[in-house]
Amino acid sequence: MKFTVTITLAAMASVMGSGAVLADDQDSHYKDLYELKQLHVAFHRAVSHAGVDAPTKAQHLADILALWTNDGVLVAGGVMYSGKGTPGKASCAPGSLTVCDFFANHAGSFVLGSDLVSLTPIFTEAITLRDGDNADIYWQCIYLDANNDDLKVSNVTLGLPGQPDTGRAKKVHGHWLFSHVEVESIPPPTIDVYQ
Image: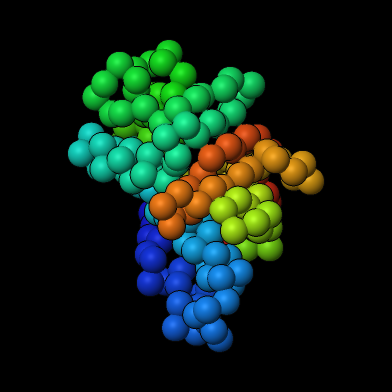
């Protein structure tokens, strides 16, 4: 059995509601929350199917980096990756310790030949606005293999559960971007599949 999941912005927007549904466009609080949810959607879109082939990996790498501030920090496995970095440059080479290095050379969903899909149990998402330009974020990412029956590949969190300041987004020139994210692997959930 081949397991295929495609995440589209339209599908996610239909679940979360569209911008037109917002009761009052002037209410910046709800507008910011909506835009932070779109950052969440864009993250999943960028990391899903990223390792299918080299051209796809290159596009998805550009897509994921577009979601980070230039001075963004990612902490994974006890290693700190600082600064965005640029694909094809020394700042993205293995060992450069940039966000680009992490996704290009270490992230499982970007390994060439893999076809992983990232999903979030929506009840794990937590977004808290600190002020007009900063927010705390947290969610889980369950990675599923789209090529086989292995529905329990990995489960990571963006931000650490119950620990403020471990997942942050910042508004830069009117766009919400990741500014500091600590990730943690946790055991994959038990998934029952009925056939």
